[in-house]
Image (cartoon, rainbow, N blue to C red; front, side, top):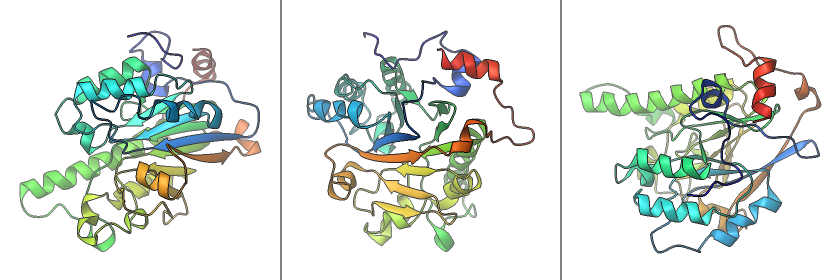
Length: 297
């Protein structure tokens, strides 16, 4: 497969690459335009359906986020279609997988194909676009919201299910800790709040996400969070801490954001962010030498 402009450079598999992703220079101005979409479910016969639509992101945004369910069943042939649909995209592409992408049990192959295209998988490591804005993401999982959240009580199968929800929330926390940027963006497949699943049948709310994911989002003061999965949910909501959350399932993008392919959210860069660094005791931060080296990669 041929190389693409946003394929990570440098020595693959190095600790620096795994920890911080690839960085790129700021565009002129004091904001970053983030395009996001999920749940476009490419099948083997969908070649050409989205290619021109995705190409528009080069003029409309600085980075593209894919919020999972890129395929129908997660088979390699479908992922190859996804890669071709992204052929003309020149901005960095970040992704998490969705439940459909796990269906065939080919996650390693799915990730390998996406990685070869230069798609950065946030489930593997966070990504710093520049010294101001960083991205953390996980798939997330089911579990429910508020007083109806499933707890780890009873059968071992129930404990295992809840354990998966807790593991995903912990992975998100760790990814957010690893970011050195003052502005942090979160990408998920499953919903972290109930507000954005409203509109779906109430009986399936517990299968659309869980609010254990909210705690790290609010604690690390994310600028914005995106998710998919809830096709017939609500386009936007807020966490208890006031972080805006957008349901960027393609259905919602088309019906609510009035865009054919992705929603674009502009994030202002605070003037003080050039010198501000979020640091916590016991959390390793990149050195200035590492930042400089990563910026030239």
